[in-house]
Image (cartoon, rainbow, N blue to C red; front, side, top):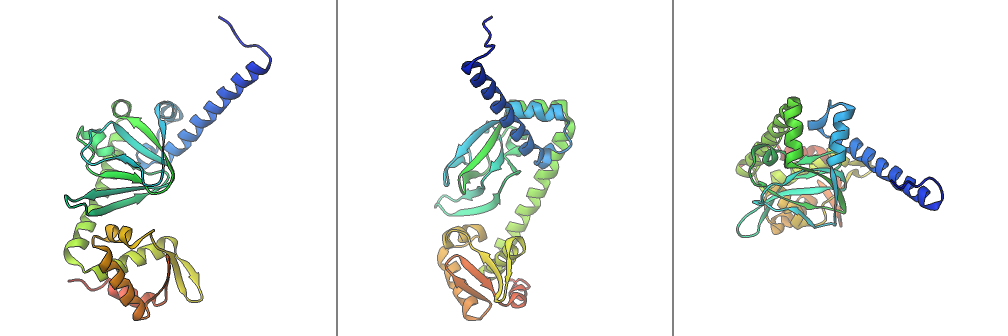
Amino acid sequence: MYQLTSGPAARVWSGTIAAVAEIKVNHGQTLARVPIFSGLTESEFAFLAQRAVPRHFSAGETVFAEGEPCAGLYVVESGHIRIFKSSAGGREQVLSIDGPGSSVAELPVFDGGNYPASVTAVDDATLLFVSKQDFQALCLAHPQVALKVLRVVGARLRRLVGIIEELSFTTVRHRLAAFLLRLSQKEGKRTPEGVEITMPVSNQELASQIGTVRELVSRNLSRLQAEGMIKIDGRRVVICDLKSLETETDFAE
């Protein structure tokens, strides 16, 4: 067999191998952050990293659509994804916005069904794809992975029950106040005026996340501002009266 022993070609070849090895290590680090893979050994992560295929998506690009046959699961390496359901009329209900270290589509990989929701990239994102066959082989070899999938699916079921309760039993004003409070707890910044947050790209996107239409979002934001609870400057919102906003979430229809 011909071997490269020295010279520029050998250095290029060596550099390529090192780059590939570094990419696989990075994939392994991403997979290690995923709850369903926690506790695996180094060799088991190596098994996954060698089979994980990076796929790049631009902002707004579809990862997969609801009802498509499931080919495998995805792990977010960078960027964010949007998981949502669509009605026949085109209205959307956002189920989750997930970032690095999150996994998606474990259930259809597990039960053999189609993808139950659609996923698009929120911003430029890199996802690691693990085929259904490789994931099932991992579960057969390591049953604890299947148990962790059940825990993750159980947590998502609880979150979906919470969404159903909000949509069924609360007003748009209540849901909007709850959304603002969650955002303030997650990424709010204290300022002399109050707690500053950055809203989603548009009121249409916000409407999809709280289960309503854009017009009602705009109307209720204006009312909260008129009542002195918030100040709006484009996507920048300052919660001026946190206590009053919290009181809004105590009341439902």
